[in-house]
Image (cartoon, rainbow, N blue to C red; front, side, top):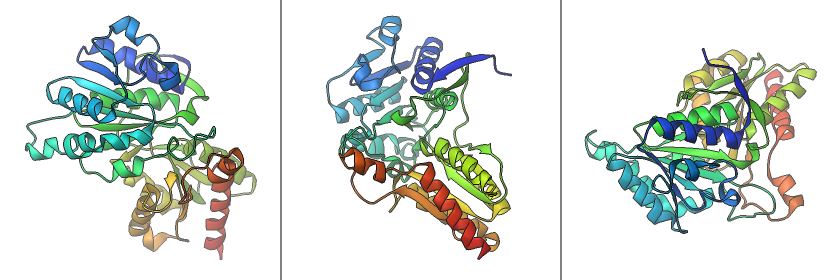
Length: 332
């Protein structure tokens, strides 16, 4: 049993994960630009330099490729680095060490080499940050064999999945969504890991399955509450991990409800939402009452205007509309 917790926000839950794991394992190091600056990393790195020193918490210049390559090399040499990218957009500069190197080492060495590194990418949406500061690239990383990809939606899972990612012997991409920093919940005080590859059923239902992750998971719960008032019982699944995907939990739910809405925080075309919809269709074809419906970003770069941002980013209203659509199709 877990010990009683306190209410923590998303960022402070990640911060506690760092403090506890770095205390228990001296091989864990944090490297990246802005680890000393709340402007870059919010409150996630509070107190780390003061407690563990600059030999374990490295604040670097803007050098995404070099810093990420150094972290991969350090992992091969026996450390457990976490490399932070305060803007996930600029992880594009680090594709070579992430995809060509870290993802392939275990396979190419016949299992002799392990790369226990966490690539921590922070998504900063809205606030008129526009196309080069708002991109969610999780689907790209989930496409690559050898990488694990986690995307928590709650403070409890933010702590637990960061701990699990650091302890994992394979490279893990940790998707950190700044829009989630305002929420709080009770988080256990002890160090714990949330299982990678295991989804959570946030709400049970019988008419439609809402599959979501990251910032759209709480929006799916809001949508389920609205739908319940209309007589539609929605089951909400928070994926938590995008790779390896917990297809068994999703399929079991859709086999029960016969309908699915898949919510992706990235672009529609080529996204992880389409992959999940395809797996649902393949596994549940005989029992589907309607084709799965997707909620995702439009195939456009993020706008800089606040009014356009309001139309660009999906929320609970779009999930409700999609659920109504799929239920109506089924009844028809």
